[in-house]
Image 1 (cartoon, rainbow, N blue to C red):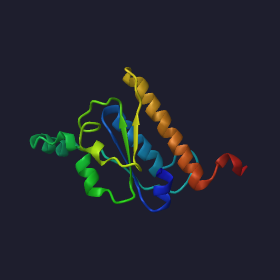
Image 2: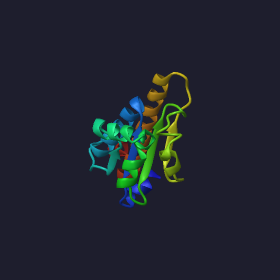
Image 3: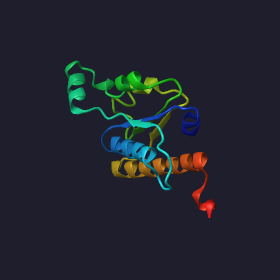
Image 4: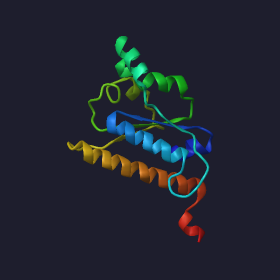
Length: 146
């Protein structure tokens, strides 16, 4: 799904709370910079609301929209949303508007475990696998170039 979006000129948008949000940003940084071999930047964006936006949303009782509002403002048809969740209880992820925005072409990475550090390790591993698969699909396998 992500490769198809990139091939067709669309972008990958990722989000998550806390350490999941950090993993979303790491994923996007590897798409924008590079994962392993040198390659062109890929269009990607992490939704990470700043403190001013969060306080404005909180003032208006809209914290559950901390990801959905910016997503709706910048996303275009064909973009892929990658949502990372360490639990099914975060109201701005699973129970909030962003969950209703997920389509069959979007990706929810939710790894069940009661130890959040294991969830975040598994998220990062999963995202690294996605990066490797995206790079291989778009640019070939660098190990076969020798």
